[in-house]
Each structure stands twice: as C-alpha cells, then as structure tokens.
Amino acid sequence: MKIIRRTKLASFVAFSQMRTRAKQSVIATAGVVFGVTVFIFLLAYVKGLNGYVQDITLEQTPHVRLYNEPEIAQNTLLNKVSPHTLNYTHHVKPKAVLPNIKDGLQIIQEIRQDNRVSAVSGSVKAQVFYEVGLSLFNGQITGINYEDENILLNLAPKLTEGSFTDMNITPNSIVMASGLAKKINVRSGDKITVITQRGEYLTMTVVGIFKTGIPEIDIEQCYASSSTVQKFYQFLLLI
Image 1: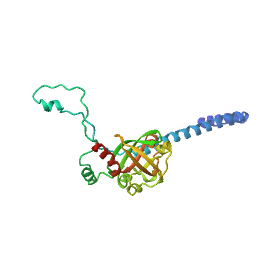
Image 2: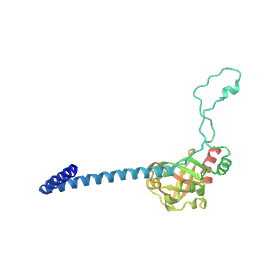
Image 3: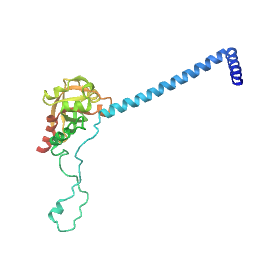
Image 4: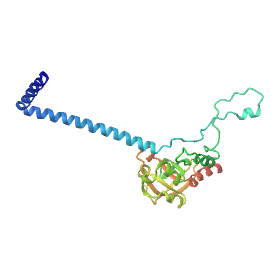
C-alpha cells in the first residue's frame, strides 16, 4: 500500500509541475524526441553505409585469386658459367618471364569440378595508356570470358550503356568504367587509341560503359575479351 501511495504522490507532483510549466515541459519533451530521432537516423545511416560499401567491395573481389608472383632469379648466369666457384651477384633482377600461369585453362577446368566452388573465371591483365590528343591517361584492361566473369562478379547490373556481349562480336573492343570514360570524354561507339607498355598503338572501339561504385575501379578499369588482351602480350613477344 505504501508503494501505491508513494507512486500516486509522485505522479500527482509530476503532473502538477507539468501543468504549471506546460511550455517548458513541451520544449523538453520535443528536445528529447528530436535527439533520439537524430541518433536513430545516424545509427541506421552509418550501418547501412557500411553494409553497402562492404557489399560492393566484396562483390568486386573473388574469394581466392591465383596468380604468378614475379620472382628473383635464383640461378644467375655467373653460376651457370662457373658452377664450381663461389660467386657473389648483387642486385639480381626478377626473371624475364610473362606474369601468366602455366596450364591456366587446365587449372580452371579442375577447379570447376570441385563442388565447393560456385564460380571460377580466368583473366589476363595489361597496363596501357589511352591517347587523347596530346594527353596520355593510365589504365588497365582485363581480358575476360564475359559469361564466367558475370557469374563471378555480377557484371550485368553494373552496365550503364552499351553491351558486354559486343566484346565477343566487335574486334578490338572494350567496355570502359564510367569514371575513366568521363575523364577522357568517350561514350559507347567511340574509338580510342591504346598504347601498350612497349609503345605499340592499337585502335579500339568502346562498346559499353559500366559503373561499380568503387572510385579506384571506376577511374581506370576496362574489360575486353581474352583474345584481345592477349594481343598486347604478342607485341611483347615480338619485340
């Protein structure tokens, strides 16, 4: 009974103060409501933004990546000439080999047979320069099989203009990232001059524009068919 009486007394005093100071009560209540509302909004915004960034980042990154790491030559020419002497060679350069994986197609076929793997795609990358007037813009072209790469990285929804499938139809064609396309002012259907690392010139047709939402990718990435990018390495072998 005492608890009930004390509760009634406290409630009577509280409501009496609220009635006599109605304006202050309304302002205080509105302030608390506004503060809690802003807190909930910011918390939901930060959580949603973190989830969005995580999703688009992981979507553009395979879980496992196999590649050939450049290695320093262990057996030098001096060791081959004088194998029975103690040789000291300083500042040895990396091996002069292409950064490709031997028997890459066979490795892909073996990985596909593993039931634990949901998607696998092979690619070949090449660093190039895009010539626009007197200016050169750095970029990277990745040679892919679109059907496999689309399953792996979900490329189709990221296309904003043109078509990915035209890469297999139009010779020397590329699909360019939106940031790079905006920087050099090209659209689907335009032609652009590409310069390889060895200075070879190649005219390519832009058949599509895509956007991932990641600035580091959208500012330099391009896709082409594997056969198109392999031409750049043929230039390296011919020189």
